[in-house]
Length: 373
Ligand code: XIL
Image 1: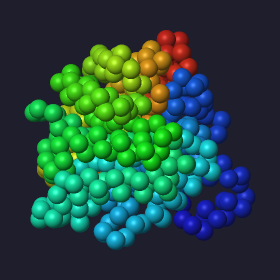
Image 2 (image 1 turned 180 degrees about the vertical axis):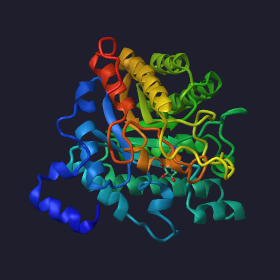
Image 3 (image 1 turned 30 degrees about the vertical axis):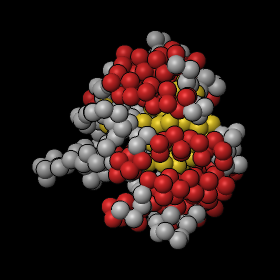
């Protein structure tokens, strides 16, 4: 629809009629009924996406705008405009905000990685920089953001303990411990999370428990663990996810599903940003999702939400990573430009069969009404 047409319709129709989200459509947040929060990871949304978030969610995670490289692209320059605008939007909409993320080995600004590579930044200077970063971000937004992903993706998928990256090579596990120390000092009341992917794999979970043991010994116990939830149609298994929920909860940590999406393409689970893949020109992906994949996606979401409902006492929040298929980061990862369809809403923000499958699980109508809408 062009701009003139939108303006004309805006004069003759109520605002809600211009938005894809139907206000009479059942709300996921209401269907979840307080058992866990429903969230979306997003940049500042378009009006249509904002309506969807407001209707279905009560929580918003800052997708990119609070990341180090966004806030401090050069050493002497802090850029707050994007984060401020997004946080204003969330506050006005009475959404609980999750600040993502204070420390992450990826998406570090180039000036920091250059300083590490040149040897200009030694461990003590790196930890000072990290502390300054965390305190600066929390001084600005600590009063409006109640939950923080303090450290993201520090653990190795293979190998011994920590992910092999320049930051951990320089600082070892101390950077994680010091990050929690800085965050706790700067925002004593905040809910501080450790966030990672592949924690459904027992070997990676063992590394998590090793890290949590170190944090506990320092009196820096996180307030919860974030399981990202970047899943495929088949992996990881529901049993594997359930074991992760149960073990993490048994260790005394509430579970947050922080970045849920289900790619319709075959790939290993997880979200290692470095693992980009080559796409032959002969494989354009699905511009439109075929019916059988709609069905498979709905079935997989149903399985997951059946699990979430069953384990709701251990789960604080389920956040979808992005609002609809049009904004999904999976359209550019692991293959740039391949359209993916991993969410409950399509590119026009219309609910997909997967949405109705989730709704049925949340409302307990799964057995009685299995037909596709
Ligand atoms: C992604 C964003 O969605 C993209 O827009 C960005 O280009 C790359 O990062 N795990 C995380 C998130 O913790 O921060 C990542 O977000 C997705 C994987």
